[in-house]
Image (cartoon, rainbow, N blue to C red; front, top):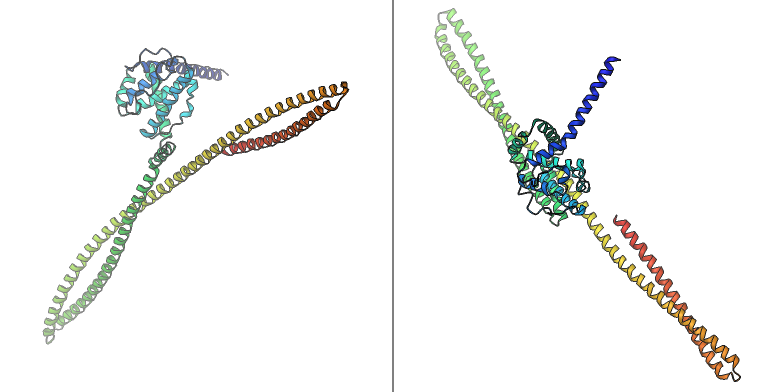
Length: 452
């Protein structure tokens, strides 16, 4: 048990030490920010960076060509919306800078602009960490690393941890050239300029055609060398056969010469001729040996040339395969880009259709309101006629000579019937308008649902 308790105590002390270092990270970042000359007033807390103005000044010092003057709104005060807009602009510029200069595709969505604008320390630290990554990777990085090393040891240690982390993230999110071209093409397509991907595709196709042509030439040269090497091998074999025949004949004449010398007498005359023949054969053998030596040298040279050509051919084939894979990859990205463009067009059509249907809904709602108003007016007119008819009927009942009063009542009854007919017609039109309104609303909801 005692060793376990000791280990537990040591682990707790280690965690406490790490926590203390994490708490000092914000202090180290504040000291680093204050080391820049353009920081005014001096930053005392990470919340002072929540409006993005000081961060933009630092980025302007690091890369003035990428972070332009007026990139963020000044003097936003405590307005959270304006501060969040500044942070969003900074994140967009940082994304472009990391992708275009460092060829790194960071997931910048991990930084919450609203939380940064609210002054949340952990979110502001994420933003400043990205600025630190710009400083230690830019063209003038030696100057900013020297500035970092001028801080105290604790700040140096904390900032080195952050630097190592941002560099590791950069390596993990590194883009190749084709991916970066596609990302630039997507940005161009969103802003109305999507021709970059097609130009890159054409350049790769042209380079592919040149490589294929070189491979074809190398293959033809390789075949020609093989033919010449085969002919040289045949010639060498023929020379070897001639040399073997000459050596055999030399051996035969040498034997005859030795027999003639040993036998003496009349064979000496023949032996003299044999000796001359042997000398001729020796000269012929020497010539054949020289020819064989020269042929072997030529064969060695041709074999060396053939090996070099085969190596070049292998390299070109490898380059052609790599380029073909690159073209295939680019085609895949291009297809995705085209699909995204098709989806954007469909969405735009759906939105346009929904807007038209919304206009129809508004018009139909206005028509329904008009019909309701007409219906109410006719109801009031009918009620007035009913009142007048009742009064006329009372007058007719109280009048002794009711002929004239009867004519007035009949006239009012006729007007009332006409108004009731109009009332029914208006009700029918109102029901039709409501039906059309419900139908238009359903079509609008369908169009909006399809667009999503």
